[in-house]
Length: 214
Image (cartoon, rainbow, N blue to C red; front, side, top):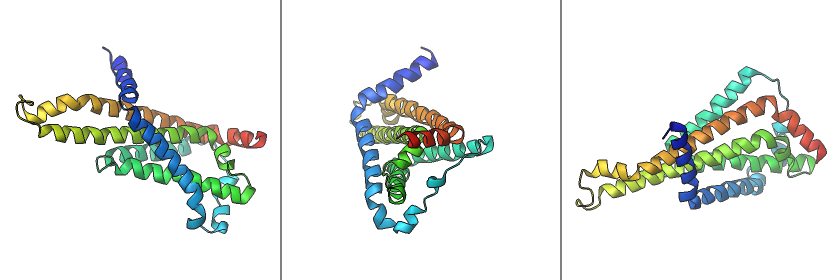
């Protein structure tokens, strides 16, 4: 089986075998956005909210700026994934901060312009891919933590169950979940690169067009 075939096999099986973890991730992301929207007034004054920078967005079509965006966002993905080994700290923090800030920004644009969805319209193109990457990356992190928990748990199973060495057998039993986690992480990484390209070159004029139509 080729690398491509193996990759898509593990990617597909991750969503099939761990669909409840993925559904939880999606619902938590939605909770973060809604929570950000409703707590915005508690965290900031109306003046602070109405001064939000996306109300005057512009782009310079700069390759350097695009690379900075991609490197920054991809590094956040990498750190979030690594930090998931600490009781899923990375995925939870990443979704609360980044998707929650989208909710806060939506409340800000509502106060400034009366439209609670203006921020989503202005950033809909790259924002969709960026949030999708965050959700996928968090899902990968949850799978990584699940893999670690199951691996440690299986190490302490009865010796007759682990005939050829506790650690070796435990890794062999659970390696499928590790591969699934890595497959989803790679997908999230690639989606974030796409989001960076769109943010610098396409998202602003496209978002302004959508905001003008709707």
